[in-house]
Image (cartoon, rainbow, N blue to C red; front, side, top):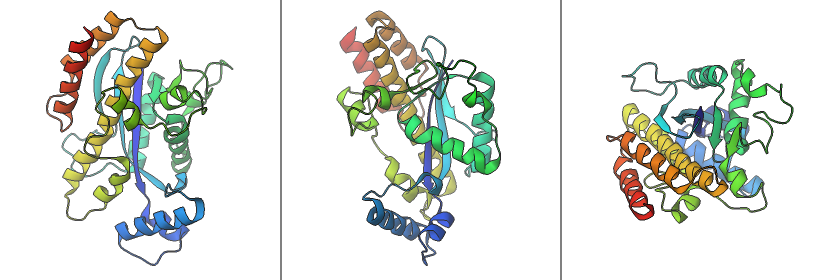
Length: 270
C-alpha cells in the first residue's frame, strides 16, 4: 500500500512569543515578528521545527502497484466538523493508520521536514510510532535514507541526495506540466489560519484542500519517477493516469485544474 503524505503547519504563537520574547498579542503580528527575528539570526525566515504546530495531514492512498484509491485528510472522524482537529487527534489518527498498515511512504521533503516534526510531536504527546522505528531488516526500513521501498522522498531522490540544491515541489511540477501550487502556497497558510475575518469552516476547507493538492501533485510526480526508473512503461503509466482521472474528486477547488492537466497529459502521450 502507498501513502503519499504531506503536513501543513503554522507557527505556534504561544511558543514563538516565549522563544523570541515578544510583547505582541495579535497572532499575525507574532508570526511576522518571529519570522523577522529568525531571519536576523539564521538568514532564513524558516522557524525551528519545535516552533511549528501541525494543523493538517493529507494523503493519497494507493495500492502496491501505484493505482490511485482515494485522497483525503486524517482526523476526519466527525464528517460535519467545521473547526480544526487538535494536533494530538491528528497525530493519533495518522499514527494508528501508519502502525497498522505500514505503507510505503511517498513524500517531497518528508525526510527533511514532515517525519522529523511528526516524531518530535509524538514525543510531546507520548504517542507511539513503533512501525517507523522497526529495524528487523538493518538495511531496509523507514529510517534508511537510500531505501526507497519504505520511504521514497522524491526531493531527496531527484536532488541525488543533496547534490543539487533549490528543488521545490512547485518548480519541479511546473516543469512537467503538473499543476503545482496554483492558489495557495505554504507560506500563506498561517495568514489564512490566523485571519479573524475568515470562518473556521472556510479556513479548514482552504487549508485541507491545499494539503490535498500537494499530495496529488506528489502522487503524479511519483508516477513519472516510476517511468524514469523503468518500473512503469508508457502503457502502464497512461493506464494509471486514466484511472486517476476517472476517480478524481470532482467537487474540490483544485478539481478543474488537475482534471484539465490530466486530460492534456493523456492526450499528448497516448
